[in-house]
Length: 492
Image 1: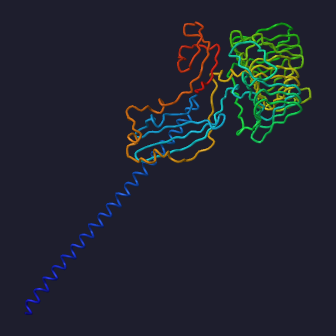
Image 2 (image 1 turned 90 degrees about the horizontal axis):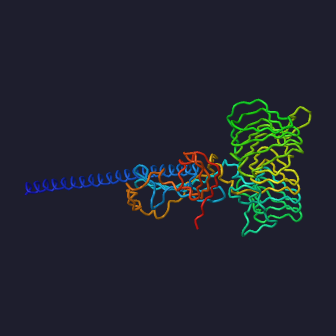
Image 3 (image 1 turned 90 degrees about the vertical axis):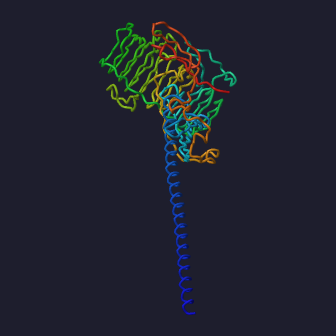
């Protein structure tokens, strides 16, 4: 009996060891499964983190491409969800929206693997084309009694238009009179369009003064274009006081002083580029701009002195014929007579045809003076009954003008819902697009198409005309441009 009991007890203990071993094996197996699942989860998180970083980088690349597209004259839109731009193993698209005048919002969505990211960038686009500023007094605008500011469209044609006494919004062209400060209209002064003061500025109207459009302040200040110096051969001083007529043509030079004396006429015949520290036209002196064969560009760096009794003559009456750019600033004794001289003294008789730009100086147009084209200054003052007629066709007429795009704000925004719902590893299948058929970022730019009206000289020296969409015009055919008018097409 005892032997049997002892044998049964040993058999029972052997079974217990087996059960304990089995439990231990199962526990180790379960732990291994948990560790594998944990490791798999960690790996998926690492992959997702890497994909999200890649998508974020793609979205940033999209913003950079959109920024560059704006600088090169495109709309800033690149691709679309239906046809995104391919970049490596991922893709992106950028949508550009104008949120305010010359303020563009860019939204870029990037996709890589399971990663999704959408970023937003707000930029301000500033054209270095002087005419893009319109009529501007960056610090202040003052309109005297019965002064008038309006606009018209010359279409590149020469001649002074006959403008109506009253503005008809249905048929007229509205002007934009701008300032970063206040705009003041004297008695019976007229602005046929918008008077737009600075963000902290206001429009002040005297008795019977009128603004036919908006007087709401701008959201952002208007930046003045930078005057780039001309690289020209030095020419010393040019003093013409012989009482005769002298023509200046051919290769331009950089002069210390250009002075036109009494009863003398100096003709600047285009095509011509000139630079002078000082430009002075004395009483009964005459400065004539002849742009029949080409345009004239004149830079004045220290002193523009058009004395009372002097005369400006524009026989061609072409608003594209002259660009007078004045970078002078500061008041001091400039001629050594002991009196203080302002950087700009504008008392000549007109009318004036062209672009007049003095961003750092006060420009006071004399009583009754008429200007056709565009004008911008630090302080712009119109004397009694003076008139400025802005030619809207000048906008975009300078093909060499650059565009600055400055960032204002940046942030991460919510991913589009239709994209966030599907986290498949292949973004191309998510959007149902063929990877090998997608364009590269540079090929996916949306061009800003323009209605173009251009007179040009082709490679054979023959003068030709073209009017139509700019995208259909081959610029390689144009050896020289005589006239250029560019207007952005509006899609209804």
